Length: 208
Image 1: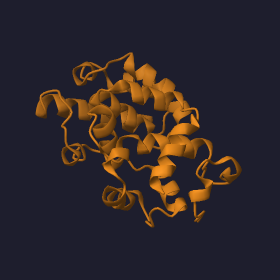
Image 2: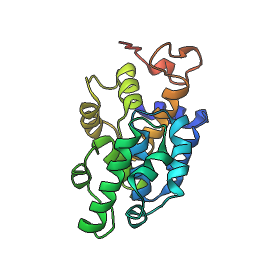
Image 3: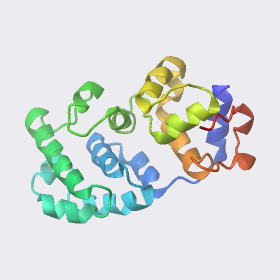
Image 4: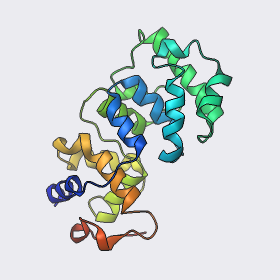
């Protein structure tokens, strides 16, 4: 079943948001990390321009050591919790420079030691930044996998662990992008558009 689901989603050519496309282009662990922090609890439409404004201030941890908290907060406004995120990004930049020789640690365990960085963010950095197989489970991945009946879990971290044991590794890198795009356009939390869904026949429609 999962082979057909992934194949159909890849063939959909559903438009990806500007922010998702930007994340695909980064190929830099630090940029993926700070952009992902901005995106938490904020929609892609708001996060995209905020990320572009942030990148005008810097693109490396060393760059951000020269930026004030107020200046960064102003640049990323109006993302959710923008003041807290500005402080967080500057603290993480300082830690990366001082403790990790200016390089994002290539480990989920080390990244989750950063304040406010959870497994979702760390996995995305591993996949999009380091190019290593990792499963980033956000609300879309968690919802759709449960709706399909592919997993039966209560929260994203649990979904990640089940997928690590069940989902073929060859799909790990693309799985998040495919399901996020599908979730934003078709399989929405409320009123999913099942009539035009390419994986409708594989779905158990377990809508809670």
